[in-house]
Length: 125
Image (cartoon, rainbow, N blue to C red; front, side, top):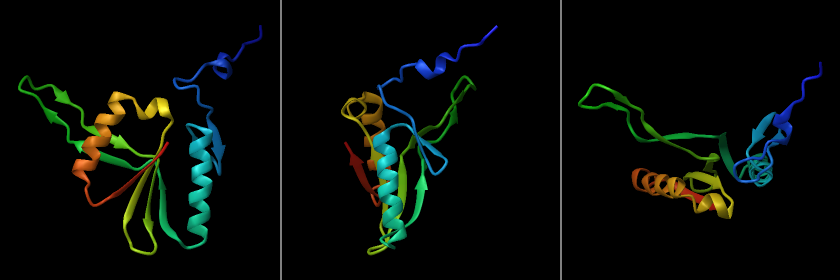
């Protein structure tokens, strides 16, 4: 009996195509292309400490009145790096028009901008 791998035909939530570069799997071709661009900037010495999928805590976890653990809320960006010229920390998120308008993403972006005002936030749409 031959097993058929249906996962190759499974549609993604936003019709994106997973793409692999340098052993890293990106959620879209657009995100992978931006990684290649940032990697070239790092090689040229314009940025430093390029990091993939950095996690930022928006709200810590806690125990409710009933003793049940409520998980923390986190924001996971696509990239973080340090600008070699001015030393600022830059966070980049690559989004499509569809994901950019997602209400959960928009709420987390607002919370992130409030909690981390010293971070330069760039959204690639």
